[in-house]
Image 1 (cartoon, one colour):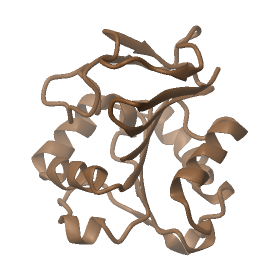
Image 2 (cartoon, one colour; image 1 turned 180 degrees about the vertical axis):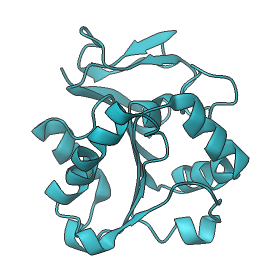
Image 3 (cartoon, rainbow, N blue to C red; image 1 turned 45 degrees about the vertical axis):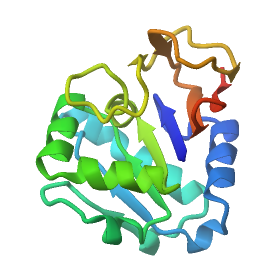
Length: 186
């Protein structure tokens, strides 16, 4: 399991380095699936270039980034061709509805459980928590993003507390349950 839940993506060098380390390969050969589906309003749409840049600044080549709007599902066989899935921020409810309606939820969770690498940004992180009904159920806690004060750096005790708070400069890293859950950044 390799999941990086963030408020603002690869905002710091530490989060970027963690992401590259989790990928475990030469990033110029990495293939990414970029999902901007949650970006349904002007503010979220304006952040999309920064999100694409997150992947580019890690060394992933533009030609190796595919975009999916989740109007169609994706079978696990096709999803496994990607080294990373990047879920952008925006409207959490809409993103979760698209994921569930297209049955991408099944493929995505199978991908994660088969050691696929996923990075969530804001709404792309919240879909894994119990903030909304019909969530993906990866973490059994409420997740707050874009907080002024967040969790302390270090390993988190499992089961997780009822509410985990992330600032724009920290990330919840999930490598394995229950021992591989930690906060990096500040």
